[in-house]
Image (cartoon, rainbow, N blue to C red):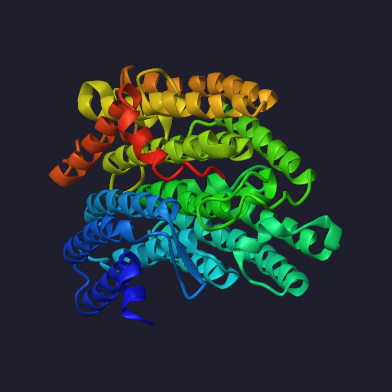
Length: 493
């Protein structure tokens, strides 16, 4: 490998090197704070390195990894989200023990896998990144070995990931057998006219992607995994693991579905859609994900499970823009990913900071009276929930507006109406949590009233404050971010 390729791989190399250092530190001393400090410095350096290599794109490394502006944008999301999760996890884990530095080794490995997945241009790197991310998550989900629900969640995630990998591998094998290529860019040139082997393989591949995204009808056990995992890990699963798959989905599958060009170097505008049936399949999945996610969330009294169903619905929203195609759609997907990351990370960061040594603050009753005891924390969670609901002056409102605009521009009227209706439905279960925070303490409440106030570390409080400012700023003045996204969305899908 040439020196130029090594420079191009700088963000990945920094994360990989940092993970090795943390592994050695954790092997000799399990001090949590030391591992956290090294991880935080490494992630910040990796974030800066993305801007260092930005002028070099687009470029490819050995035909296995492709780096363009959309991929580097995905790197910014993944690494930035991992930084906030690392901060939230340090404050969360510190309450239980000063040991457990290997938590950050697993977190860095998972982030490395997510970045490899986002940049993959071949089946080999696609699967390598996916498994590196997933295997690390098995251990992170079951990190709290004193909680049976965490072990159960880890086992369920293992089964789901195994089923997903089986579909993915079989689909890849069938596509390779028919086309003789392992290039993800070839997906957009598959046609029914060449036979059924490759299209069936494409279908199996999309089923595996559906399991990873946890969209309907592949969402089984997703709420159980969210509920059982530690709060910071749940935030990581809801954002980074989903975001990395969305990036590769847009780069690899959007040209095959809408036939309107590719994202930078992945596909060309001359390639035709695989079959008229596939957009309809995605449209049905998007509609079902929105309705099922929001309706089931109405029945829940567990905040982490509510946010799990909410994430299913939000991925349905993203699929609306994905189906629309074109420049506006790509910008809508990118902007909504940012707003979804910020609001979801903020919500789970608040849950993590309110959790005690014995259990997470995951019941609606746990938040009763929070506005009186922790007004700034209640305000932060309120801002996140209002943004997830898509109310004006929040980032979520602008994100939903842009998605509806993209859907209407592509004449996806039914999906645009479904999105608007489901946005209204979601307000009810978000307001259920908000109203609890401004009511009196629950009788015998386990977190809200009967437990002592937990001192939130300054760095964790700063992280939550930054996310709140981002939610409000993007809702009031989204132009700078939209201008930045416009620099790499001019080519459309």
